[in-house]
Length: 68
Image 1: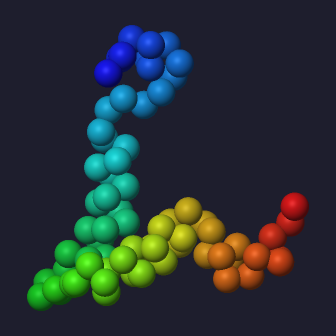
Image 2: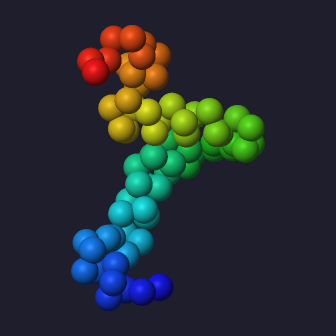
């Protein structure tokens, strides 16, 4: 990677942001005691969690109510 160029442009180059997102989106919901998931069953749950965490839930279900 061209770290110097990316830093000059203000890009995030560390993994901390991604690791934190994984902790909040995935681990808090899916890694509880005795939970087992298949990929087919987990993907829809994670999609919904992402909508909630990004405050996009209403826009997904009620797109006509979002102001332009």
